[in-house]
Length: 461
Image (cartoon, rainbow, N blue to C red):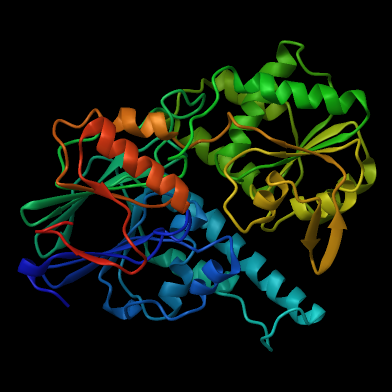
């Protein structure tokens, strides 16, 4: 443990990958973990979820979460199970969404472990999940909801403030005051032109900035995202096919329904059945309605977007969709095809060229979604190789992340340059591209840290 004069920041995740966000701040005899995410994607990256946590969980005083997505929160149940006894601080929206996401994550991991055991597809026996649904439910008792813009005393002279980040419900930037220093984490920044969420709060003066770089090497296409969606729906409906939209259950499903509602209302897509086959997305919709202060949708827009789709909750109803045939639209999780009901739809409809698989967001390397986007036409699903002859479409305009231009625009709102900007939470090419732009366009000090690297807050390099 460090003393106050040796305040440090350790990068425990999201340094050579776009997942596994984990940052440890040590100062004044305190250990504060900012984000506690799951590693996803390539097997060598996922294996970090099963290794011992870099510090003893019991030695951590508090966890601060930027938002609910599993690459930022999904390791909390394991941390609590393995000895962490402190509070998990998050905004009200993040806390409520984690109540949906974490138990579901545990359930899916148990399901995958059982299937791997049955198939004999793992080198380990017995096959154990990273954590169980019971572990996840237990961890929810550690959550302490926080308001935006309210200073939180963490002890030892440390203070945290949650600031709006856009992106999804409850998403926050986290500003840490560490003695006389200031440390700022972007979390995932939202877009200035998001049809749903308000844009991120401007960047205030900080000494050290830790930024995401998910889209650090690209910009979102100009134009109306709804047109991109309308084109594929019309094309597939004309040939009697099924449009399978892989969507993140929190945030992306709502955006898709919003656009489909507008397209249907304007007569720009045919009146074919639309199914939202994600119980979690259905539940999350109610939370968005309860937190209208975070987005700019009116009540009537809410009613219209949820009227456009038929909500599918039960497993039996989900299975019936695989027998129904087209034309129809199915929106189902997960967004990167890593698990969930969408995999069963891919098994049923992926081999038919009349159908289409629509990827509606970022696809991390090593996921099935990334493989399809790169041209693969065979997917390994539940131990079987499934031929994919359906059309594959990657929607470029639906991401809830700020792109490279958006991040630079947000950084320009700062009253002064940070002493150092650390570029994280991106694939290596994206992180390095954003680092280059920050240095060239803003003249700021910036670099990409390494996995498990430690830096001193008094002398950031």
